[in-house]
Amino acid sequence: MVRCVLLAFLIVMQSAVAKDLQIPDTNLWFTAPEGFTELTREEIDVKFRSNAAPRYVIGNERRTTTVAYDVRSVAVTDEILEAQLDQIGESFGRVIPGFVSIRRTMQVLNGRKWAYFEMKSNAVDADIHNIVLMSAYEGRMVVLNFNSTKADFERMESILRTSIASLGSREE
Image 1 (tube, rainbow, N blue to C red):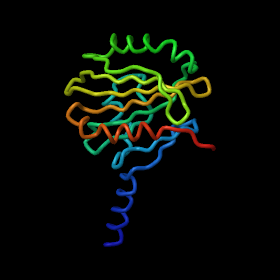
Image 2: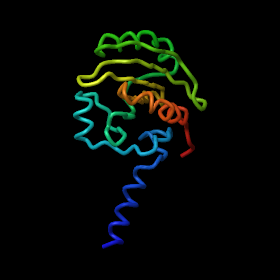
Image 3: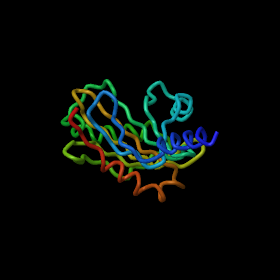
Image 4: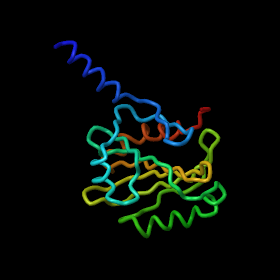
């Protein structure tokens, strides 16, 4: 009995430590914040309530801070993202309740160009701080959304920025 409990504890602990995650269908990786675990399909459906919901989301235990990541079948290049940076940022303002832009720019992380959008918004039950990154990958768009309640963001900011800084490619 003790062995079963110990084994179950080790499995849970292993899934909750910081780990490198591959963005599916790419050779792009990032380090997940420590303690983040995968959301179930049901949790994703409730949190995102959209036909365009991401396929992959990890989050803290309370799910008040999450990282969504996916590859979209949107034909894009680095040049298109850079040329449309302002238009993309303005479109966020039209579709996101309570949208306040903090920063929008192109930046290079570990040799790859990313469109970077940082913003505040309102959810039904909380004020939200988002950092959205988009990059071209083999003609498609990789999107990551680092999302935290305002109450969590101060505590989580450095952890989330460390995860963002880890974004990079690996040889397959």
